[in-house]
Image (cartoon, rainbow, N blue to C red; front, side, top):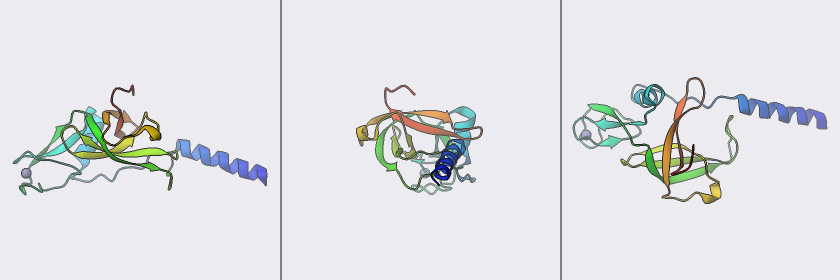
Length: 153
Ligand code: ZN
């Protein structure tokens, strides 16, 4: 009985490390965001073609001036921690319990959700400056990751 349990735990651990991250739901409005990451290593945000308002998450029409004209604009990859959660449950492979999901306020203003790494959760502080790197998670998925500003990635 004990052996079976131990075998099961080992299998679960293997599945967790081999699992791919969940895929983002890509549509016509947000495909530019993932293409910018994958093809140019850029974090791009929608910018209105009329009033130049930056908006995220992507939507078809500007909430300020109602224009449907827009273009992606590359951001500077720096920001501050606006909010975060430490995830314990439910844990979806390949994530491990205790990882940090953060809302990062970009230097340009828009807020983007991404993982916060390179810091112990006890040390996380709202408002702390972060640097964003564009990282390949697997063969097809490239995502932004935040780390405390000044830390090595
Ligand atoms: Zn506008």
